Length: 293
Image (cartoon, rainbow, N blue to C red; front, top):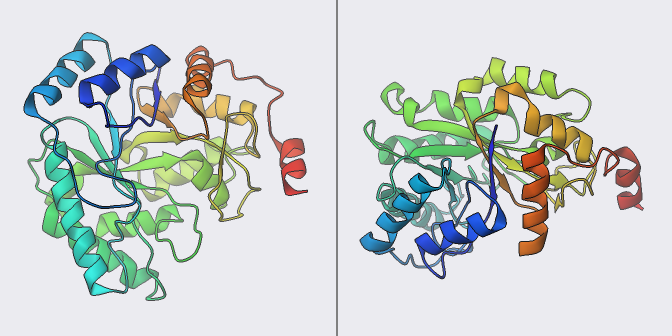
Protein backbone atom coordinates (compact mmCIF):
# COMPACT_ATOMS: atom_id res chain seq x y z
CA UNK A 1 0.00 0.00 0.00
CA UNK A 2 1.17 3.50 -0.83
CA UNK A 3 -0.29 6.95 -0.23
CA UNK A 4 -1.20 8.77 -3.45
CA UNK A 5 -2.08 12.36 -4.25
CA UNK A 6 -1.16 15.43 -6.27
CA UNK A 7 -0.11 19.09 -5.97
CA UNK A 8 -2.75 21.45 -4.57
CA UNK A 9 -3.03 25.21 -4.17
CA UNK A 10 -2.97 26.80 -0.72
CA UNK A 11 -5.24 29.64 -1.93
CA UNK A 12 -8.34 28.45 -0.06
CA UNK A 13 -6.47 27.37 3.05
CA UNK A 14 -4.92 24.23 4.49
CA UNK A 15 -7.97 22.30 5.69
CA UNK A 16 -9.52 22.98 2.29
CA UNK A 17 -6.59 21.19 0.64
CA UNK A 18 -7.25 18.07 2.70
CA UNK A 19 -10.92 18.09 1.77
CA UNK A 20 -10.17 18.63 -1.91
CA UNK A 21 -7.67 15.77 -1.95
CA UNK A 22 -10.26 13.47 -0.40
CA UNK A 23 -12.69 14.48 -3.14
CA UNK A 24 -10.06 13.47 -5.71
CA UNK A 25 -9.58 10.13 -3.96
CA UNK A 26 -6.12 10.89 -2.59
CA UNK A 27 -4.47 10.10 0.73
CA UNK A 28 -1.59 12.58 0.60
CA UNK A 29 -0.81 15.77 -1.30
CA UNK A 30 1.87 18.32 -2.06
CA UNK A 31 1.79 22.10 -1.88
CA UNK A 32 4.27 24.90 -2.43
CA UNK A 33 5.50 26.56 0.76
CA UNK A 34 5.18 29.89 -1.10
CA UNK A 35 4.65 30.94 -4.72
CA UNK A 36 6.68 28.46 -6.80
CA UNK A 37 8.47 31.36 -8.48
CA UNK A 38 9.45 32.90 -5.14
CA UNK A 39 8.11 36.03 -3.49
CA UNK A 40 6.69 36.67 -0.06
CA UNK A 41 5.27 33.98 2.20
CA UNK A 42 1.70 34.04 3.53
CA UNK A 43 1.50 32.38 6.92
CA UNK A 44 -1.37 30.02 7.64
CA UNK A 45 -3.46 30.61 10.74
CA UNK A 46 -2.99 28.30 13.71
CA UNK A 47 -6.69 27.42 13.54
CA UNK A 48 -6.45 26.37 9.89
CA UNK A 49 -3.34 24.26 10.51
CA UNK A 50 -4.99 22.51 13.46
CA UNK A 51 -8.09 21.85 11.37
CA UNK A 52 -5.89 20.23 8.70
CA UNK A 53 -4.06 18.11 11.31
CA UNK A 54 -7.40 16.85 12.60
CA UNK A 55 -8.64 16.17 9.08
CA UNK A 56 -5.52 14.21 8.10
CA UNK A 57 -5.77 12.08 11.26
CA UNK A 58 -9.49 11.42 10.79
CA UNK A 59 -9.17 10.43 7.12
CA UNK A 60 -6.11 8.19 7.12
CA UNK A 61 -3.71 10.45 5.25
CA UNK A 62 -0.01 9.72 4.97
CA UNK A 63 2.77 12.31 5.23
CA UNK A 64 2.43 15.44 3.10
CA UNK A 65 5.25 16.48 0.76
CA UNK A 66 5.59 20.27 0.73
CA UNK A 67 7.75 21.75 -2.05
CA UNK A 68 10.11 24.71 -1.86
CA UNK A 69 9.87 27.36 -4.61
CA UNK A 70 11.81 26.72 -7.81
CA UNK A 71 13.73 29.99 -7.40
CA UNK A 72 15.40 28.77 -4.22
CA UNK A 73 18.92 28.09 -5.51
CA UNK A 74 21.19 27.35 -2.55
CA UNK A 75 24.29 27.05 -4.76
CA UNK A 76 23.93 30.04 -7.09
CA UNK A 77 27.08 31.83 -8.24
CA UNK A 78 25.54 35.10 -7.00
CA UNK A 79 25.82 35.80 -3.25
CA UNK A 80 22.55 37.79 -3.21
CA UNK A 81 20.66 34.84 -4.72
CA UNK A 82 22.21 32.43 -2.23
CA UNK A 83 21.32 34.73 0.68
CA UNK A 84 17.73 34.96 -0.54
CA UNK A 85 17.57 31.18 -0.96
CA UNK A 86 18.95 30.51 2.52
CA UNK A 87 16.39 32.91 4.02
CA UNK A 88 13.55 31.23 2.12
CA UNK A 89 14.77 27.80 3.22
CA UNK A 90 14.85 28.80 6.89
CA UNK A 91 11.49 30.60 6.78
CA UNK A 92 9.71 27.79 4.98
CA UNK A 93 11.23 25.11 7.18
CA UNK A 94 10.03 27.06 10.22
CA UNK A 95 6.58 27.17 8.62
CA UNK A 96 6.60 23.39 8.18
CA UNK A 97 7.42 22.97 11.87
CA UNK A 98 3.95 24.34 12.55
CA UNK A 99 2.65 21.22 10.75
CA UNK A 100 4.99 18.66 12.31
CA UNK A 101 5.67 15.18 10.98
CA UNK A 102 5.66 15.98 7.26
CA UNK A 103 8.24 16.47 4.51
CA UNK A 104 9.84 19.58 3.01
CA UNK A 105 11.19 18.77 -0.45
CA UNK A 106 13.54 20.96 -2.50
CA UNK A 107 15.60 20.96 -5.69
CA UNK A 108 19.25 21.01 -4.58
CA UNK A 109 20.06 23.82 -7.01
CA UNK A 110 22.22 24.72 -10.02
CA UNK A 111 25.91 25.52 -9.62
CA UNK A 112 25.87 27.89 -12.64
CA UNK A 113 29.37 27.03 -13.81
CA UNK A 114 31.09 26.87 -10.42
CA UNK A 115 31.35 23.08 -10.62
CA UNK A 116 29.47 20.28 -8.91
CA UNK A 117 31.86 20.10 -5.94
CA UNK A 118 31.41 23.79 -5.17
CA UNK A 119 27.66 23.44 -5.55
CA UNK A 120 27.57 20.50 -3.14
CA UNK A 121 29.61 22.46 -0.58
CA UNK A 122 27.29 25.47 -0.77
CA UNK A 123 24.14 23.34 -0.38
CA UNK A 124 25.61 21.47 2.57
CA UNK A 125 26.62 24.77 4.21
CA UNK A 126 22.99 25.96 4.27
CA UNK A 127 21.77 22.62 5.60
CA UNK A 128 24.36 22.68 8.37
CA UNK A 129 23.34 26.23 9.30
CA UNK A 130 19.57 25.65 9.14
CA UNK A 131 18.69 22.14 10.29
CA UNK A 132 18.14 21.19 13.93
CA UNK A 133 18.48 17.65 15.27
CA UNK A 134 15.17 17.89 17.15
CA UNK A 135 13.07 19.30 14.29
CA UNK A 136 9.87 17.44 13.38
CA UNK A 137 10.09 18.05 9.61
CA UNK A 138 12.13 15.75 7.37
CA UNK A 139 13.91 17.69 4.61
CA UNK A 140 14.12 15.89 1.27
CA UNK A 141 16.66 16.39 -1.51
CA UNK A 142 15.01 15.67 -4.86
CA UNK A 143 16.62 13.51 -7.55
CA UNK A 144 17.17 15.74 -10.58
CA UNK A 145 17.13 15.19 -14.35
CA UNK A 146 20.49 16.90 -14.92
CA UNK A 147 19.49 19.73 -17.22
CA UNK A 148 21.91 22.63 -17.34
CA UNK A 149 24.11 22.72 -14.25
CA UNK A 150 21.70 21.01 -11.84
CA UNK A 151 23.22 19.35 -8.81
CA UNK A 152 21.66 16.03 -7.81
CA UNK A 153 21.49 14.34 -11.21
CA UNK A 154 23.17 11.22 -9.79
CA UNK A 155 22.64 9.32 -6.57
CA UNK A 156 26.32 9.91 -5.86
CA UNK A 157 25.90 13.69 -5.89
CA UNK A 158 23.03 13.46 -3.42
CA UNK A 159 25.12 11.17 -1.24
CA UNK A 160 27.92 13.75 -1.26
CA UNK A 161 25.52 16.39 0.06
CA UNK A 162 24.31 14.06 2.81
CA UNK A 163 27.87 13.16 3.77
CA UNK A 164 28.85 16.83 4.18
CA UNK A 165 26.02 17.49 6.63
CA UNK A 166 26.94 17.07 10.27
CA UNK A 167 26.17 13.55 11.57
CA UNK A 168 23.70 14.74 14.21
CA UNK A 169 21.61 16.43 11.49
CA UNK A 170 21.50 13.56 8.99
CA UNK A 171 18.49 11.81 10.61
CA UNK A 172 16.26 14.73 9.54
CA UNK A 173 17.43 14.48 5.90
CA UNK A 174 16.22 12.17 3.14
CA UNK A 175 15.54 11.92 -0.58
CA UNK A 176 12.49 12.25 -2.85
CA UNK A 177 12.73 9.90 -5.85
CA UNK A 178 11.24 11.47 -9.01
CA UNK A 179 10.53 8.86 -11.71
CA UNK A 180 10.74 11.35 -14.60
CA UNK A 181 13.94 12.88 -13.27
CA UNK A 182 15.81 9.63 -12.66
CA UNK A 183 14.76 8.36 -16.11
CA UNK A 184 15.79 11.59 -17.82
CA UNK A 185 18.99 11.45 -15.77
CA UNK A 186 19.91 8.05 -17.21
CA UNK A 187 18.61 5.50 -14.69
CA UNK A 188 16.68 2.79 -16.57
CA UNK A 189 13.65 2.20 -14.37
CA UNK A 190 11.86 0.60 -17.36
CA UNK A 191 14.21 -2.32 -17.98
CA UNK A 192 15.93 -2.54 -14.60
CA UNK A 193 13.93 -1.02 -11.74
CA UNK A 194 15.37 -3.51 -9.27
CA UNK A 195 18.88 -2.59 -10.38
CA UNK A 196 18.21 1.15 -10.06
CA UNK A 197 16.78 0.76 -6.57
CA UNK A 198 19.73 -1.45 -5.62
CA UNK A 199 22.08 1.26 -6.85
CA UNK A 200 20.15 3.80 -4.79
CA UNK A 201 20.47 1.52 -1.78
CA UNK A 202 24.19 1.04 -2.33
CA UNK A 203 24.93 4.76 -2.74
CA UNK A 204 22.39 6.42 -0.45
CA UNK A 205 20.34 3.77 1.36
CA UNK A 206 16.70 2.93 0.78
CA UNK A 207 16.04 3.93 4.38
CA UNK A 208 16.62 7.51 3.18
CA UNK A 209 14.01 7.29 0.39
CA UNK A 210 10.98 8.94 1.97
CA UNK A 211 8.75 9.98 -0.95
CA UNK A 212 8.19 9.47 -4.68
CA UNK A 213 7.18 11.91 -7.41
CA UNK A 214 5.25 9.70 -9.81
CA UNK A 215 5.54 11.05 -13.35
CA UNK A 216 5.88 9.73 -16.87
CA UNK A 217 8.38 11.48 -19.16
CA UNK A 218 8.16 13.02 -22.62
CA UNK A 219 11.85 12.18 -23.13
CA UNK A 220 13.94 9.10 -23.90
CA UNK A 221 16.29 7.63 -21.31
CA UNK A 222 19.13 9.98 -20.39
CA UNK A 223 17.74 13.05 -22.22
CA UNK A 224 18.35 15.35 -19.20
CA UNK A 225 15.40 17.57 -20.11
CA UNK A 226 12.81 17.14 -17.32
CA UNK A 227 9.48 17.23 -19.17
CA UNK A 228 6.71 15.42 -17.32
CA UNK A 229 3.94 13.46 -19.05
CA UNK A 230 0.67 11.91 -17.90
CA UNK A 231 0.90 8.37 -16.57
CA UNK A 232 1.15 5.83 -19.39
CA UNK A 233 1.46 8.41 -22.17
CA UNK A 234 5.23 8.89 -22.14
CA UNK A 235 8.54 7.14 -22.59
CA UNK A 236 8.47 5.37 -19.23
CA UNK A 237 5.06 3.85 -19.87
CA UNK A 238 2.25 2.43 -17.76
CA UNK A 239 3.69 -1.02 -17.15
CA UNK A 240 6.98 0.33 -15.80
CA UNK A 241 5.11 2.80 -13.57
CA UNK A 242 2.89 -0.01 -12.31
CA UNK A 243 6.05 -1.83 -11.22
CA UNK A 244 7.18 1.33 -9.38
CA UNK A 245 3.82 1.65 -7.60
CA UNK A 246 3.80 -2.00 -6.51
CA UNK A 247 7.51 -2.43 -5.71
CA UNK A 248 7.97 -3.85 -2.19
CA UNK A 249 10.75 -1.37 -1.35
CA UNK A 250 8.43 1.61 -1.98
CA UNK A 251 5.36 0.61 -0.02
CA UNK A 252 4.01 2.86 2.72
CA UNK A 253 5.47 5.99 1.15
CA UNK A 254 3.67 9.09 -0.20
CA UNK A 255 3.54 9.22 -4.01
CA UNK A 256 2.90 12.64 -5.52
CA UNK A 257 1.61 13.11 -9.07
CA UNK A 258 3.16 16.05 -10.94
CA UNK A 259 1.62 15.14 -14.28
CA UNK A 260 0.15 17.83 -16.60
CA UNK A 261 -3.47 17.36 -15.49
CA UNK A 262 -6.53 19.18 -14.24
CA UNK A 263 -8.68 17.81 -11.41
CA UNK A 264 -10.43 15.14 -13.48
CA UNK A 265 -7.14 13.86 -14.82
CA UNK A 266 -5.74 13.60 -11.30
CA UNK A 267 -8.89 11.85 -10.08
CA UNK A 268 -8.48 9.25 -12.83
CA UNK A 269 -4.76 8.73 -12.21
CA UNK A 270 -5.26 8.44 -8.44
CA UNK A 271 -7.94 5.79 -8.97
CA UNK A 272 -5.73 3.84 -11.36
CA UNK A 273 -2.75 3.95 -9.03
CA UNK A 274 -4.86 2.87 -6.04
CA UNK A 275 -6.00 -0.13 -8.06
CA UNK A 276 -2.38 -0.68 -9.20
CA UNK A 277 -3.96 -1.40 -12.59
CA UNK A 278 -2.39 1.14 -14.93
CA UNK A 279 -3.14 0.03 -18.52
CA UNK A 280 -0.41 -2.38 -19.60
CA UNK A 281 -0.45 -1.06 -23.16
CA UNK A 282 0.10 2.60 -22.25
CA UNK A 283 3.26 4.49 -23.22
CA UNK A 284 6.70 2.95 -23.41
CA UNK A 285 9.14 2.53 -26.29
CA UNK A 286 6.70 2.91 -29.21
CA UNK A 287 5.12 6.02 -27.69
CA UNK A 288 8.56 7.39 -26.99
CA UNK A 289 9.58 7.03 -30.63
CA UNK A 290 6.42 8.91 -31.68
CA UNK A 291 7.10 11.71 -29.18
CA UNK A 292 10.54 12.25 -30.73
CA UNK A 293 9.11 12.69 -34.24
